[in-house]
Length: 228
Image (cartoon, rainbow, N blue to C red; front, side):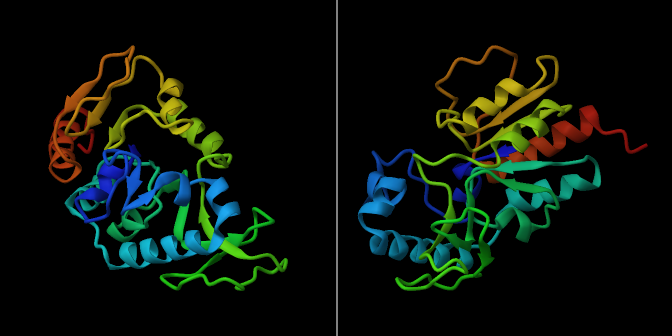
């Protein structure tokens, strides 16, 4: 499973892909790039402190819970572009975060220095163990994606691939589908069809994640379940 912003939209967490380059009224360049951090770290900290509180208040939607329920029938591995922890809170046991986690902070100097902060704010002057300013453990545009290699390994070994709530236009995450074996069943759940050209045969469920995942569950159990 590869999930994107549409997965959490039904939980009230806003997306930016359909908002003309704005996210909660902020320009993406100012709050989602490494350049923005270097230019104005205080604004970045304030922005992600607000997003962290918002994510903490949100609750998993039926789509999150349904994916967790599917673990009763299948081995489910979730690769998510989302920085919230709604998959985990819904009960999913295998979740790989491509773009980091809002409930974590890390050193602005050393990538491996990561701490869990829950819903707490990061303030200017808060230091990591190495003495550098703490920053959100979020991968911004212009930064490498450390988990892209393990994610590609998961996709390459998958017996079935499902894409939920992502536009498939942001790289390197969008390139993960190229690692899937051509013969496996593939599904896309999204209210609007992807604008990119897909080479293999895909089954489209043109609905939001919350209702689309319910339909997916029925399809998977009726066609691929070997519980008996």
